[in-house]
Length: 328
Image 1: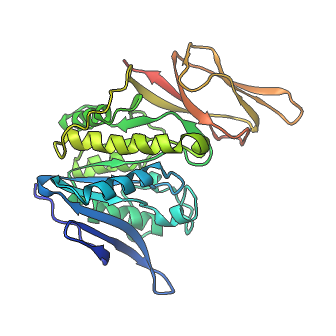
Image 2: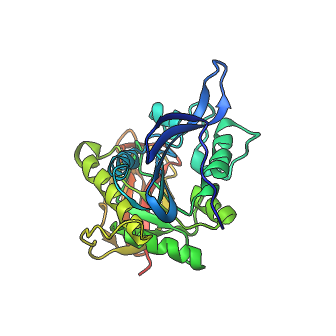
Image 3: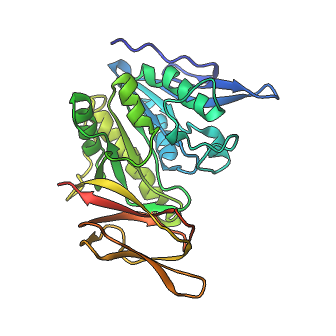
C-alpha cells in the first residue's frame, strides 16, 4: 500500500533534505496550539518510511537525545527511504518533566487509539495515528523508567504470531539490547504499538532504556545504546549498511511482569537487576515507620530481575518489581 507523505501545519526550518515543523491538534485560549514536533529527512533513494519517536511519557528522555544525533548525522547523508523523527510526542508532558499530560492528567500510553472528540490527550493519540502512523511503514517508539522506576534496557515486541509481528521480533533482536521483551499478557490497555498493529498492521518495537535513577552515571551510555539501536534497525530495513557494532552476548527473551505492593512503607530491594532468581526467593521487603517488616515479595517462578521501584518510600499499590519470565 502506498504511504502518502506526512503534512505539517507549521514549518520552522527547511533545507534540501530536512524539514522541521509541527502538527497542530488543538487551539488554546491564547491562540497558540498543542503541537507535535516532527523532523522529516529524505534519504534521496527509495525505501521505507521509518518513524522514531520519544517522550510518549514526558520524563523519558534518552530516545530524544538519540533522535537529535540521528537527525544531525543523516541530514548530511544519502540513505534509502525517509526518516520521520518525533523528539517529544507529548511535548506538554516533556516540557513539564512529567509522565502524564499536565492539562488532563492522562497517561498517553494507556489511551490509544485515542478519540478526537474527547480530552486533549485522547485527541493527541487520535491525531498522531491519523496523521503520522498511517503514513509510515515501521517504527521505534522509545520509553524508559522515568523518575521512579529502574529497569535494564529491553526491547518490546508483540508476540510473533504472524509475519508482521515476526518482523517486529527480528527488529527487536537487531536493535541489540540485553533483553527482548515479548509483550504478551500486558496488565493494561491502550498501548501504542498494540493499537498501531490492530489498525495499520505495521511492525513496531518499544525499547525501554534508562531512567532518572541512574542518569548522573549512565545517561550518555543509554543515549548511545538508543542511537546505535536506531542505526541497527535502519540496517535491518536496508536503509543503510550494517554499522558493524559488536553483538550483545547472551541476549535473553523474556515476558515482563509488573508486580505491585499491597502496603506502603520503606522498600528494600534484595535481588539486584540482572540476577537470576529461583522460585520463592525474596525480591523485595517492606518496613513500616517503626522498622517492622510488613510485606515481602517472593519470586513466583524462576526469572530475572529487570528492575523496579527505586525510591525508598513506596505507596500502597505502586509497581514494586519488574520481573522477567525467561522464555528461551
